[in-house]
Length: 617
Image 1 (spheres, rainbow, N blue to C red):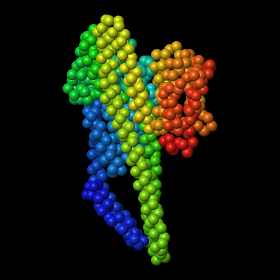
Image 2: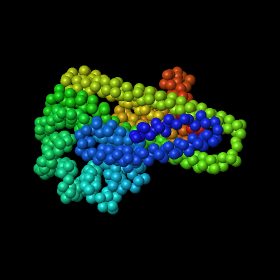
Image 3: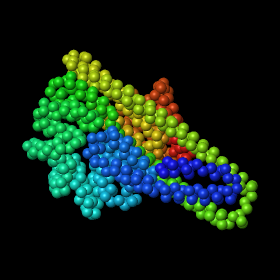
């Protein structure tokens, strides 16, 4: 009997509401419990068979995953669901570990981290040391570009655990990957030490699949030290192993390594040939990151060689593939927000499951007591009807909560769709337009036309930045004040490049974590933008201060400049001031403006107390 047959056999029992008498309900619970025990006994051979199938899929080599990323993601997602369906937690966690690797190779970094953290929770609960070593090592290695120090901590935790519990096979990969992190931290001697340790272990175990990875790392490190002859020796030795592999991922990696080496040595034609060989390999475009990297390098090399046509074509292809990957800094923020949200959601789901199990056990005990004391139990119809009314009321409340949740979900999905359309369509078109204008600047020699093209290019980039700010605001559901401050710091970097004579300072005096709704986030962001623009246009200021502080229990945001100010009686209020006041009130706050010879202060006071917080959310 399959698990579907088991499920529908139990579901086919009549609903408990059809039993009006207490004795009928007691017999219902006894019948249902007996049937479930009987069905579980029949299910045991099928569970064993399903475990075997799940383990076989989880044992697929990583080389295969690297070369079949598109197929790997749905395969391991299904394997995790199948394992969860039969309560096979270790199988589910191993499937999520492989899924995290495939998602990382696809460029879906936030989803990858989420999958790894799910696996870690299960492995820690099951005290599966070997699996924990693997997933800690993977997560640490893949955090290297977002949070190098955090990645090193995870890697060291995995190395210490493997050394403590005698897992030399795991140490081969851990030493290798930790060497990469040390190299990124410019600890070259330490990186060489760990690469050598990894290579010695792999040669001792005869690990022909792992040896070329370490040889490639040693080649890259030698090239970094400008020891090109030694780099070629390592890379040539790696090629001897790669030609024996059935999967293409390793061979593509080596071609890119040769391209990088020739590029560093100044052999531009040889480097171009290697990168082109990668993108012309059949099915190479499944390796999204590798192809994106090659187009980026080709655009730079063709430009150096004076071949602007091919440089432009390569740049266009690079932009197409780059747009499919999430910007690493943006992705880091998304990952943090999603991990916080998913962690809270999973904790809540776990508590609900535990409560359901506890209620079920309690219900069975009560049913047994009722069966033994059936003679003395004589509840009247009045109490029965009252309980029934309460159940109906609870059901109506639950349905109302579900409808509200569905409504919020539809709003969230629509915002996500709009932001995706803006990014994929308008964003891509603007990027192509700016790239085309930049390319035209290389082809014209007229100073007047060149100046206009540069102005158009600058305007286009500013438009793209505004579009990204809008997409960011749309994608933000519930965020913190820290997220808004981080966004303003990004603007500060661009501000410094454009308005270096004016000093922009961001001062956050609040230490606690303040949650903001998407409505509050976008309106505060736009108020600050408008106030900065007004100060730059009209005040003649030297300094602008953005200050976040607490006023009693409320959030106080001030934008202060040291300009010459203006007279309220003589200056006609424009749309800018009206817009700022309207946005502040929409965010659930009050707006004020002070101006004099010492400068201008714009203040928005956002109410954070429970009576307004709920409304704002």
